[in-house]
Image (tube, rainbow, N blue to C red; front, side):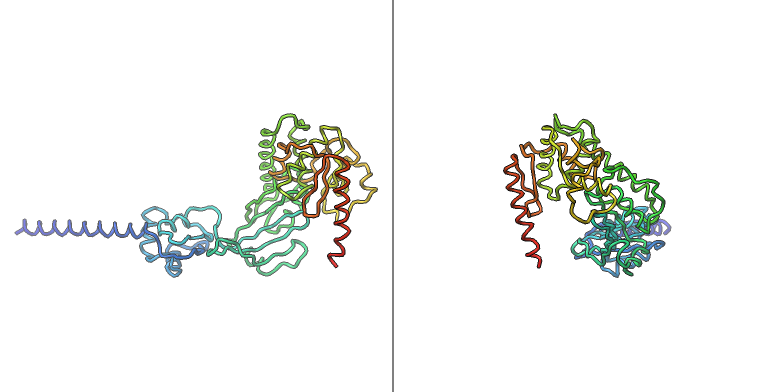
Length: 386
């Protein structure tokens, strides 16, 4: 009898183990299978929340079919305690396993609201935008000029949210003073800036920042990035350039940056300045004259006067020979590369052509004809605007 009971118990145990194994395999399959989402969504993970609340939210949004399976899978993977606060993009068809990885991986939020402080040559603007998960494109919700316009309420609201991301986007051609003043005006940053970094020392780029970040530390990040760019451009430079140090290359790149906003002609502009330097001609470029007047502190806001073109400053390349003593702005990677590897041309002149670019010339007669055409375009512009 006891043998019979033991045999039945063993059979029942084996059956239970078999069924449990099947359930585990089924659950694992559900955890790793493609999920029900047909469109991407943003999943917000509030600070201090737990997997119970996150799984319930995911079920409500139709991202997962079973909250318990999600929680068991996260616990089995030892990720239950790794939940990160933020707002995260979940792609269509994401499995529970992939979703758990997204909300526990860490790093910056990949979804939700973003505040971008744009440091431009003429203005510093603040843009509040939100990622549309359906298109993976940002939708602008507000934009205003820092220190000029009234601060919109939405900026105050999103700045206080834990999952909002912040970036400082520095445009090519801004001066170190402009960047420093912009950082001083960003209210979520902290710390004093003892002095403005050297002109040209900051890499134009987009930098992620966090509330409470130190302003001087952000500037140090920009300086370190520019050192890398300058070193790479110097290492890859052409032979026989009329510059003898990385600093001179940086100065030349800054002039190129200020002379053209057309990416395709940077190397042509660079060739003009290289040809002039090689031939002992003065560079005669207006942006250097402007820098001699403003020292990079703000925008001139008007045309140059003849007296200023003739006035002697260390940066007036209508007066001095060769390069000015310092850069006149912070050049980006493309201008550094153009200075290091200019086009091979015989151009020694250029003037605006009315399209945003320039007309290049090898002789003074050709240049004078280009200038005459530009004067005609200038003369027509007021009539077109009225």
